[in-house]
Amino acid sequence: MTQFTDLGLAKPLLKALADEGYVNPTPIQAQAIPGVLAGKDILGIAQTGTGKTAAFALPILHRLAENRKPAPRRSARVLVLAPTRELATQIGESFKAYGKHMGVTVAVVFGGVKYGGQMRALAGGVDVLVATPGRLLDHLGEKTMTLEGVETFVLDEADQMLDMGFIVPIRKIVKFLPRQRQNLFFSATMPGEIEKLSGEILNPNPVKVAVTPQATTVERINQRVLFVEQQRKRALLAELFDDGGFKRVIVFTRTKRGADRVARGLEQAGVEAVSIHGDKSQGQRERALAAFKAGEVRALVATDIAARGIDIDAVSHVVQFELPNVPEAYVHRIGRTARAGADGSAVAFCADDERSLLKDIEKVTRQRIPSFDRRNDRHLGAATAAMPDPGGRPERADTRSANANRGGKPKRNRNHGNGGGGGHRHEGAPVRAAGDKPAFKGPNRGGNRGRGGGAGRSGGHGGGGRSSGGSTGVWSNR
Image 1 (cartoon, rainbow, N blue to C red):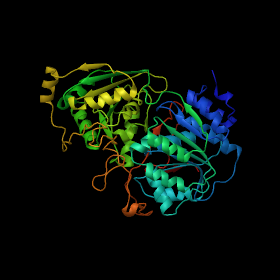
Image 2: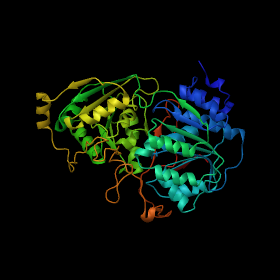
Image 3: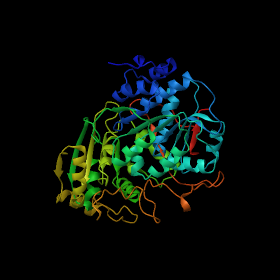
Image 4: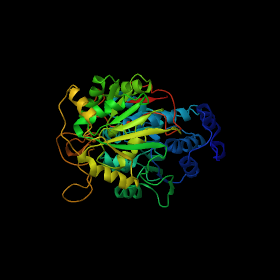
């Protein structure tokens, strides 16, 4: 079996890996690292949890160490784009952990917080900048930073970028990059628009790395579907938590309001729960994740914006309270369990009006998920009648299939923001000011547009440590 020592990585990197207890690379790491070290462009297809953060972070750090030079002022030598603040933070922590013996500087910037700390961290230049698209465009629009010094550009979780409506912002960011650069493009799936985007970004003849079939699910995850009436889902969820094996559980809902209602319902049933979604402040999101990691709460209720930004060890179960409108999201949701070689279980609730969504999921994942019928269950009926109202305004059901629009063409998740004009901004949608200009508010006026980032360890080979920037939206190891 290949070991990290066989890949030609610098000694400080090998020492950092030994500190973390890592000896053998994952398949995507073994295949991608040699190509990145050779300076080639990479097109990587790998589902979440396969260790792709280390697949690009380790060789990038090696190349930085080989060619030591100061980072350009107000710029970076490496730019990594991530769709969410949780994932951006996770990637930044991995770079920091792997490069701890190398003296590299790392900064992470994302929206939802003030600009002052970010501007100060970037003023002198950094080796590695991890950013979410919206906040990066704000800085570029205000000329508080440039991308002229970028030597390596990494686009991570490209298909989630598409779901969240970030394709246009990404194309704008690419125009700020120098033509001569190395490009690393990673995605769990390869829909048509993502394939087109990869053709625009990558140089000819990139190295292609695909470690699993597209949109497949991890074999170690025990999956099942429970058919149940919509109004009885809360009672069924409470029943699941009667099982002591449900120790650390992530529950996914389709909307932000739904996440809050489900969390309140669990609390009323005696289950410690917190919710996390795009309307929460950065401090609230960090506190919720910290409580979940520490075992202070059994349930973390999340929307799809957190589906790929949560990397927490020992998640025993993933429960899909509502099926996602985009079938690929099912794969990313259940990928929160069975990480780092562990086993895990995934339970999905399916009401009658969600059957078309289940059909789409089984088609995309090429499997028939075992199902059990809990409809007309007397026990659930009695439990539902006895449950108090969780409070909050009920949400309007939205269970349309991705192909249910009149034109017959695939339609993106309504809870992600690449469609429509004004009005309510759905979960994950980028904010655009009038005239499509960056909505920069200045360093003293702040702003609360959440756009990015991740916490925890990277795909089985992640870094440790906590961000030192608190809720400033930036941390740097300068």
